[in-house]
Image (cartoon, rainbow, N blue to C red; front, top):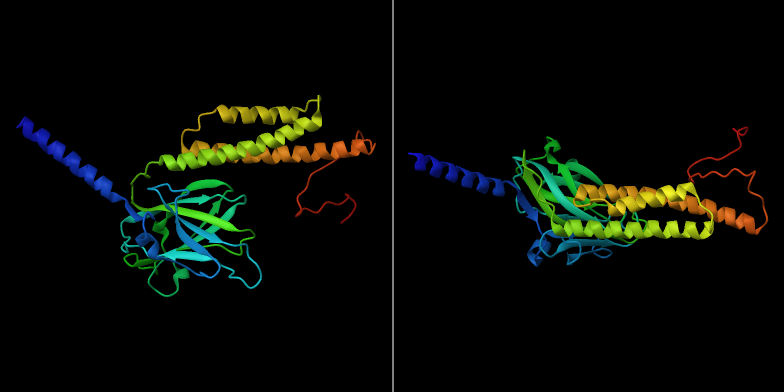
Length: 300
């Protein structure tokens, strides 16, 4: 009897493991021309869509979309879309997609998910804001699908952007459906490796700005530079062993780089004024963005 109970428990655990493994559903993995064949572009004359060996987070390939910088007369809304092999999304509450933005600017990227009705824009919309030089595991809450969408007939996954100011390249991979209560898939080594590389590029930019500041200071010291440089040292030595920690470190390095560049602007100005023999000890200098109105206090 005891052996029978153990056997039943083992069988139940095995069944549970199988069900768990089958709970998530991979929609697109982009490993073959067959995967690519269900994807189309809005403007094939100006854009490209292909499999790529770069930025793959599952398998050895990703989907690469490229669109040139927008000019008058070009398509305002570059877009690409795929037809999922699994149409019945009942029971799933999240869509996971790995997106890489290798560019030097933040990339706004939109998504629509809808059924086979002609107007897909009535479907679920989700907007991504992808930092420059980043890879992100993005979670889309599909439980918020509009009631008008037939969840048993999901027929389009549509990505789009608006009038990109520069040549834009984006990589998509590992699009997966998750059921309610199911944990996120493990972070693949390729994803961590890519974000680690992006963090390294950010650190190089920050160190370059810090070195420029040091060069302008000469033998003098600046407490602001000292503080920012020490923080960079701490980030470089910190435990960045998972994606959340890497993203936090990258975000912080971006902030530090911005602060270093502002300090560099001030030091450059001071150096230029010194060369012109213009005294700076009674001068007040402030920084403002192009969107801010800077006027004397008595001017309305």
